[in-house]
Amino acid sequence: QVQLVESGGGSVQAGGSLRLSCTASGRSYCMGWFRQAPGKEREGVADIDTDGRTIYADSVKGRFTISRDNAKNTLFLQMHSLKPEDTAMYYCAADGAISGSGGCMLHEDDYHDWGQGTQVTVSS
Image (tube, rainbow, N blue to C red; front, top):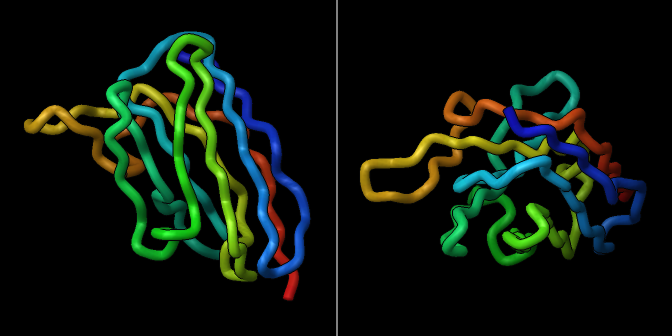
């Protein structure tokens, strides 16, 4: 089991930026970011494999960038042009299932290890 610790959340105004980090206790081929807003189900934001291949949710394409430092087992999420609807608890996930084509799948049920979350609040 991989232990995950997120950091970097906070409160910003709409249009602002934040960078989330996630430190993992071990290496995982697929790692990702998910988020859950109050009263809503948890949804995938982005994920990435060790080769750098990425998947993004349509709602964040062009605004968020996922990256990782494999040597340091660290995952990042750079968020720009934040909107009030981005307000949520953001979770780091690891040990994601690998698709038949060798990539990751941005589905909550396919990830096995989760961090405690970091809150992102965007005000209008």
